[in-house]
Image 1 (cartoon, helix red, strand yellow):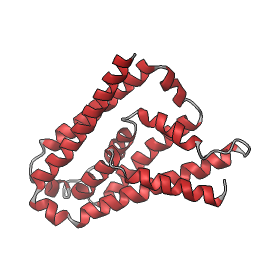
Image 2 (tube, helix red, strand yellow):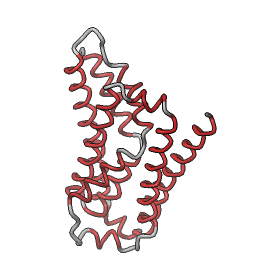
Image 3 (spheres, helix red, strand yellow):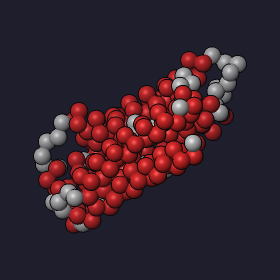
Image 4 (cartoon, helix red, strand yellow):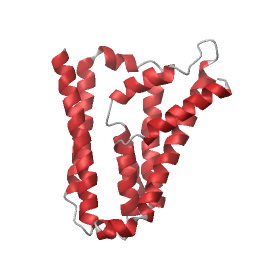
Length: 209
């Protein structure tokens, strides 16, 4: 992979990472609730999930979901249920929950698990990675080095963006504390919206068949 192609990939990956999604929303919520340092566990969980998705996509298994719509729809509904669960818990959290959760200890493995499951909540990402990453693979060059460069670059960019979001949320924590109920409801509503979108897309795919 030439440096010019890598630059194009890096800019594309940065644009993708900046698009709001379950993991960036989780980084925002956890950054305000638990602090940006603890949120690193959340981000690492998401990065691990993305690594699995990228690996599967690069191995060509993304086409398995494309040719088996029932499997895709089933996974999509499971992901939607998880996002809905996150949204429900956040939406009905008390106004003081942000302040309380900065004091109450939360296990890193719980933060990691939430980030990991959020990354895996949308199987359509597999199809996107399959189409997106293939544009930057040169079939005339060794696959493994290209895979490592693309994977490490994407995950580093994703980590940097999510960490910046968590850091920003922590910096404006005072403002969020003053509007804790509203913040929780907004984050919860966004998670519920993502869940509804996943369900609608799943139904559309089912009816389309």
